[in-house]
Image (tube, rainbow, N blue to C red; front, side, top):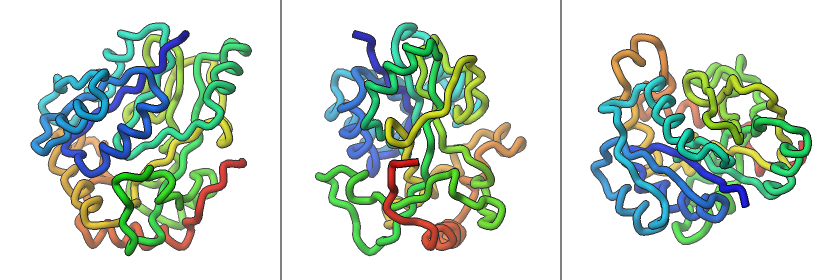
Length: 258
């Protein structure tokens, strides 16, 4: 049986990690979790919930987008025959038709599939999710990226579809910065009913979630700041609330059918 491997990196993600780990351990056989020197109990959470997965310290002192991608691909190369997916802690892979999707890729001799993405936007911020229940069931409201008018919204870092991820079976993903685009040949566009990415960028909209968003800007590498990588992370609480407010009127419970 071909192995499924997820690779992710994190810094102080104690709020989201329990949901993320419980969700993805049901899908993947193995995980490589790259710790960017977390100072909370993120590492302990990983070791408790997925003791059979790897938790490794990052080889990078600060978060630099290109170097992060390089590090992810080095870990990918350790599993040459596996199905692989690189995710952030805010990204949940929902794949009710995963086996069918893999079977179709093999049947048509394809390298990978571009999974459609959705921006999750909390329309009930007064209701905080229960840590003991799946997040994707409690906070299911969002917007499919192909239905977003990016120009009219004019939200920094949300100017075109970027939440797609590539589920592939090559040695590495051959990603452009951010890992949302792959240069691998023989890719196809995915179908929502088989698999998609739910990006929890604006959900759950509570104080704990906002706090994790605010900490990211200080972790950006000087090269990234100079060249505009991760510019969406440069925002204070008022700006984050403004962006969330602009998205709420477009958010509704997602339907899988394209």
